[in-house]
Amino acid sequence: MSDFAPLRLASYNIRAGLGTDLRRDPLRVLSAISAFDADIVVLQEADFRMGERPSALPRDMIEPHTGLRPLPVAENGVSIGWHGIAMLARPDLEAEVVNRFPLPGLEPRGAIAVDLPHLRVVGVHLGLLRHSRRQQLDHIRDELEALPQMPTVILGDFNEWSRKVGLGRLARSYAILTPGRTFPANLPIGALDRVAHCDALNVRMIDPPRRAKGSHPSDHLPILAEVTPVQTAPVPVSE
Image (cartoon, rainbow, N blue to C red; front, side, top):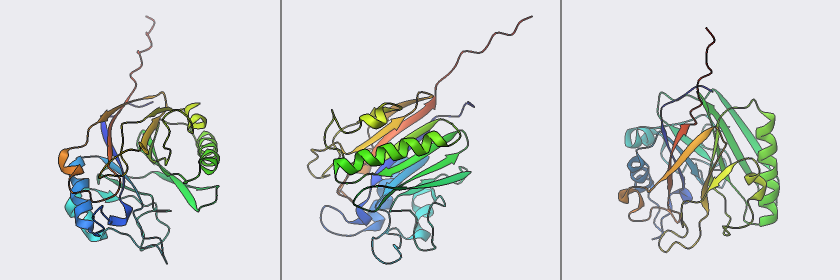
């Protein structure tokens, strides 16, 4: 694999901008995203659920407030995401390939995989029922295995309350990191938001800045990680 500089990635379920005070304030969400100082941010519930699913964040305010741009994962001109999952990235990080995976289960769910230079970033928001989540994890793993292989990191709201069971299907192929309790934001008891990665990557969890967690612009807390490639020893050259 090609080496790349360390990248800071965040995942955040923004609940369409509805905070724990039941006030919808997209600027408060954008302020939190700005505080991540991240290269890539994976969002869940970035679009409203009804109609054409318009973006919950004003598109023209995203880059001025965060320095990031939405990657082209939406299938229409009013959403910034697909099944509510969006990705924001530095302007110099362009999507080379976008894959959308409709997921099985009782609820309409999906996952997206975006190939950036040297790194595949997968955004997920799994179902509320464990039976559905297991089907979805099988499907995501199978879809990723069918793609050309490259270093892969998976971020999102896994909706799994247990730290011991429920994610084994993904753990067969990826290391899963559970950084801590993220839900509900005002009194976190569930570690729903997680990161998974292949063995070609090192991932270090970072505590989000205090400003990113203040005033609870969503019912989830964000998670933040630094991703670097695993360094391989050079092959000796015979003289």
